[in-house]
Image (cartoon, rainbow, N blue to C red):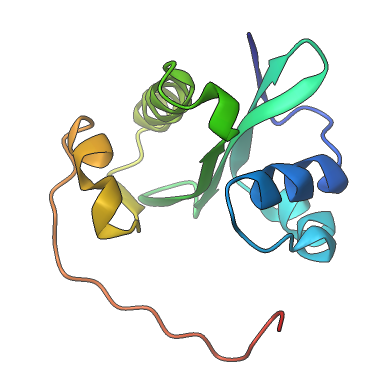
Length: 131
């Protein structure tokens, strides 16, 4: 497996990965969002995108990890853990003070491994992206 930071990746490949984990594709959103990311990490098995993680940050104090996804065929093999470890390491090197992530309760054991403090959070969707 090969990990690459903010390398050339195609929105359609991320869209396919999203669909493999049961999410909507959002392909047209990635055309814009990848250019605005602080960084993102791709994991490849040969030329196939099997893992992805995106980071949004102000570059000074705060960062938000989003879209952590691993193709189901590769889940449980350390890909997600490696993506998270690489992201956290880089954010610490960049002296980012606060790292946040939002996840479903079923993923609590995974995220607790990284010593996140668990707190209440809220999310407001201002409009529906996809039906």
